[in-house]
Image (cartoon, rainbow over all chains, first blue to last red; front, side, top):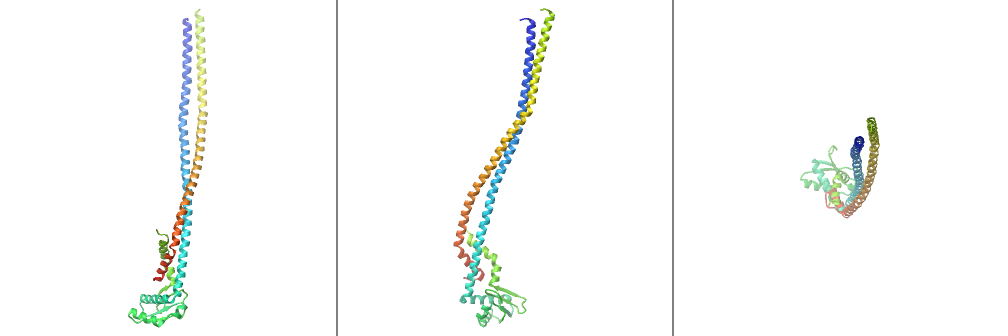
Length: 205
Length: 107
């Protein structure tokens, strides 16, 4: 091979090598850029997956929470129904007691006595319903109370019957001070306490 | 070979070398030009897959929620039934307590 041929071979060989370097660099540069972009896109994809996982968890929790809420309301309604039945049956049983003179009359006398003691006056007015006004032995009650309190007590029996299932209202003669001891009033006043006590028995462990 | 011929051969070789380099430069430009569309395509592929997986995840969450809610409902209904059944057996006791509290005596 002549000197000239070798020289031209060298020129072409160097050009080919340089050409390969140019192409290789472009490819490597592209590869790097693709990798960087891939990492960025992977981050975006992970954000989407992460949001989806949170949403899925939220959906799951919401479904359980909704059913829990629904069941709680149902349970409360059922409990409330039973409590109301208990109060209703208690009212009926109280009415049975009122009808049973043997049990009720001493109870009414005690109520009146307690009212008289509480009001602390020498003369009081006792208000009863129509049935009790007729059946109570007024003179005996007045006498017994006087003995128990160890002082003279004058009881004026109001002729106007009050609207109540039973029990009594004891008042001062001017009506300014009143001790409400009717069964209806006691039921109303004690209702929240009764619900708590009945609830403990019914639903306690 | 004369000197002129030698120079001509060398000039031709230089021309060919320049042509080789020009072709390489053009190829490198082509490769770089394709980069943007490749990145865009790659991103769209990845995000499409991620969205598909996300939809599946949410659907799976819904299904799991339904299953867990149904299991909870069954268990809670059973518990409530027991509570209410026990309460029914204690009703009379509760009525007695209420009556005693209202009347202040043993009914």
